[in-house]
Image 1 (cartoon, rainbow, N blue to C red):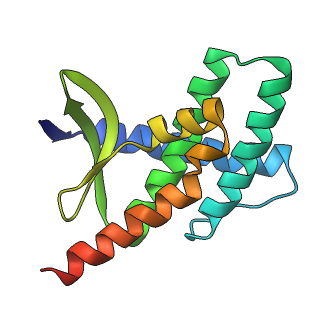
Image 2: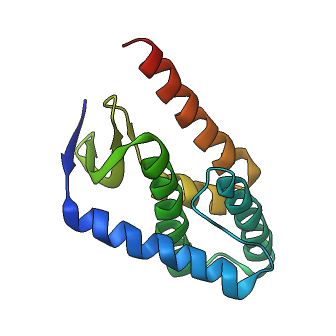
Length: 144
């Protein structure tokens, strides 16, 4: 069983982390992000490059954690801005995760997805993840 508790502080922190992802891309790549949904495909490309580089040099947990918060917050913010969602704490199996609750009540935690993408590679594609979230939102909206 899972539950959700809205948290305004997490909302504010996620916005700061999302801007960090935006700045990371601006200063470290020739790619660009904006708050449009197609930017999530750019995030996937960047995470792929980071994964490949970390695979060669070795994974550093603090880097993965920081990048997961930043890019996960960016993905969450893009979703929130386009489809509506609330930042807070998701509790599942006695574990708490920073995540979002959609307008329809669905729960997701993009920080964890980005962490999986960085560690596991393309099998945890964040763009496909995002597309699935959007499709689910559309289905839920049409059922109401």
